[in-house]
Length: 325
Ligand SMILES: [Zn+2]
Image 1: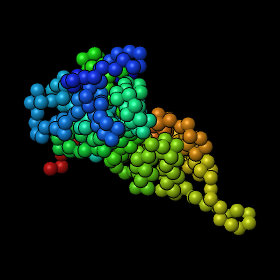
Image 2: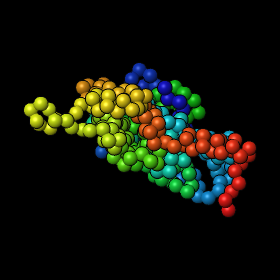
Image 3: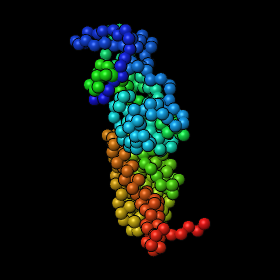
Image 4: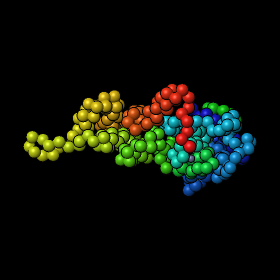
């Protein structure tokens, strides 16, 4: 469902050919050669959603005004796995700073060939009939970062079933490409580079090919085991070197790290699903990412161990230990 729509545009044309009556803005009546533009809503400007430096309350986006002491926590990238409405855009974490959230900078739809033919034939056509692609930019609302992220994907013009203040129709967007890629997981700084690289590739293909993304997560498991010293090859009875199956490698690792090995096995199964069928969804891949993140944290995130050590030191000293300086 479309959450909301922005008020539109003067000089509408009325269409009654589809058995109902509604108005299209003049921008929706582009000639077949003008297939790209902003159709169902007023175009967003290139003005940054966040000004540089400290913001006056009135300069803040609406969601930030309710939180005077800072930005709300960014949402998980899973929020992008849906048809999105510009007026109800999920504020997911910036891939560059990880601190700010991404807001809409500009989005522009392009009608596909069947939609362009419909427009050429009937002059105007309407919501639920026009489809195509879009491209645009999102901007990080952390002023010290200010990253611009390029997005692209599928576009539709639909009837607004949400807040009537945005008009009777509008655009919705399905993300298929994001650059820089959104981070699938927050990795500890000690994460090995080869594991990190596999996860970055998984992140970059997630929106367009969940199956490929799951395969790269599986590759991340292979890399992790290699870094942990688990052998990749064995010599068979014919004296030839043979690649060791991932199951066997995980089983070897399980002798010393049984719990982590179990989580790695789950990621392997999801990766196998990706290799054998094309029905794997983005959400299922993100479940695999969460499981792999837990395994990596168990092996490389020392935050909990450091905290325990601080607690021990405080209790031993019956107060905060004296600083050496
Ligand atoms: Zn940022």
